[in-house]
Image (spheres, rainbow, N blue to C red):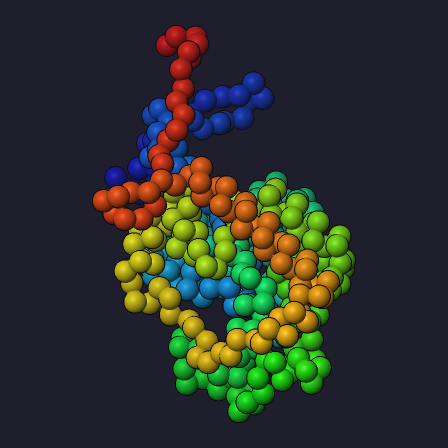
Length: 326
């Protein structure tokens, strides 16, 4: 039996009042048919990854697993490392994600702000995911990454290689690269492509980012709980991520990317940063995301004493009193 035949054999065709064909599962819903079945051929996930949040570790897992699980992983490489797509490129992206059937199911990933598919009249919506990090940790990590690189590509000469200026010194010298406005990244990534999203310290952008987080994103995790993020995704998307938790716990490649050298900021520098509006809003979004993630995790996972890590609770509802009787 061909793969398409196997898929089609699991469906019953019916006719709606309008005459259009609709599809129903032939079997009763279960943890298997409810998740695996509906994630067969057309599921598309978009991961607009924020730099220095653990995204490379996550994406490496997807690349390791995609062939065996028969889905595609595609990197969206934006020219000039810009995080903002032109209006025409946003349209092209929407069209590609929704119409590129040959590459479905798929996980698209890249460093760019949220793209609202409904804005372009698309009835098909991808499933957005993301990972956020403590904004100071992310900012400091990126600063030293540009100077010392990481253990992912240790021989690659980075943009600021040879510059021994510490993060503290950079702040005190008031250099552009460590301007606190440069910390403004996670809010605009979650906010999107409105001009207001990219104005550092803009409260409207934070409000929009929060709205998108709960209404447009399936799941937003936090860097320090990356394995739990994968476990929740494994529970929801076994088609893509089953085995992901084991990969993160036992595979040496799982936490491949770490900045080679970092010096933590001093207390006076931390105090200076925390007075800024940019940090306050970035941190508020991070804490908001963390609270939401913990809520989802609590209601999705349960600790397995045999495996010694969290697993899916399994299906917690059932159907009954079904009429008319067949």
